[in-house]
Length: 371
Image 1 (cartoon, one colour):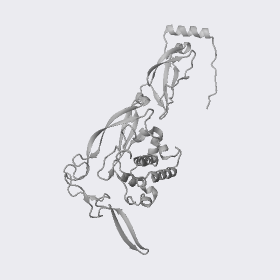
Image 2 (cartoon, one colour):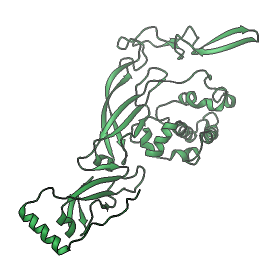
Image 3 (cartoon, helix red, strand yellow):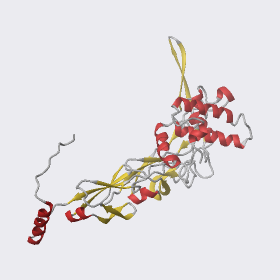
Image 4 (cartoon, one colour):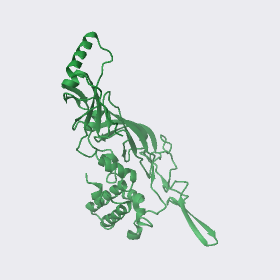
């Protein structure tokens, strides 16, 4: 998929205002009213709107910067996106106000009024647990969630079969109420959302028997999620349009997925590195040896050099986690702990005494602690 910054034509360090200006320029160039019957221009217009919807949102932008398209529910079939089933009218209602005044009206003579904002259903949250191997390789998981779905009987219209919504009599289908007030400074007009139709401009007189006009009902659905490699506890990704659904004129909410690590009996994660402690005996530390140690991918051989000191750390290069959106892997750091026996038998005591004689008697040495 195309990089969103490339679509807008800005650097990754671009400010919000720079992104806004760049989007305005592209939207003006490829607007359908300026390019009638031009499918390529329409495609570019939708791509720009989709990119702007992510990059103008600080949270979604941070997710995209960290995880790429998967982090904002694009690609792999999770997200809807403007290039999917959202109409031009949806795009204008959400982003037209960056032009000032009525969306696009100053330039093309059309669009919705400024007071009519796009309505959105509520977001949902879910948690996904991952083991270390899934985090290492990335994984596609199917999760089940309960959410509001469009009513199957009325297809989300809220109206009884064979009927449909009619124009709201309160606002005459505009979705807005204009109220004039008189003051010392003259007359002022306040425009607000129609309280009867809640800004939709439509009324349902004959309600659907299944949803009673709500247009939605709670259902359990399955969603496939492609999780990139390298995520950590506390990371999250947003799947656009996978939250609760709404009725007519209401955009679906988002699904926000939080990640949790299952952990490991021996391994501890430290960023992209893995920490492990290996306990060896005096003789093993003195003579050196090769041991099999646990890693994310199973056991691997590690050579302990002769004469290793307690607390010394050995590095297993490239045995850690990958960086998100990168190919570099961290390391596994193994701290060697030389165990001192707490009790010894007569035979062992004889051996240690003999070893002490061979090494020669010497006083302890002292060193200043480094702070």
